[in-house]
Length: 69
Image 1 (cartoon, rainbow, N blue to C red):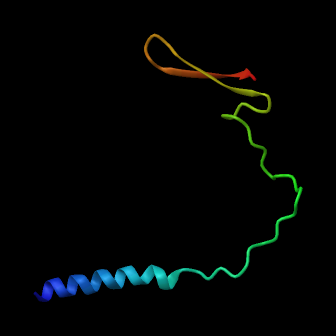
Image 2 (cartoon, rainbow, N blue to C red):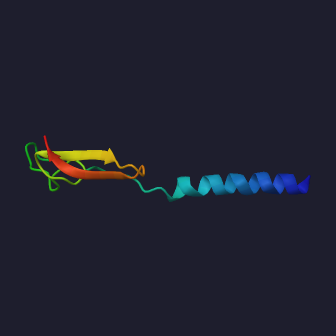
Image 3 (tube, helix red, strand yellow):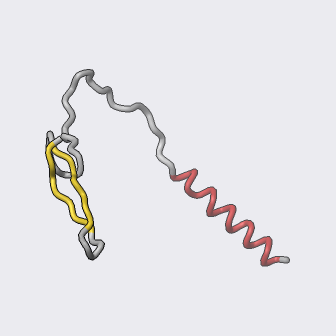
């Protein structure tokens, strides 16, 4: 019985630790409207105006190359 009580108390103590260690969020940084993104998004690493064209060979291996949109 003591082992069960000790296990329950130990699990409860481990569950409380992350709650106490969580940082307090004060205020997020303001975002400017119309600001350009610092990272340019592209489809599958191909670049602007291209996307991945995928196919399987006769050994069922996947291959891809960049094809225009």
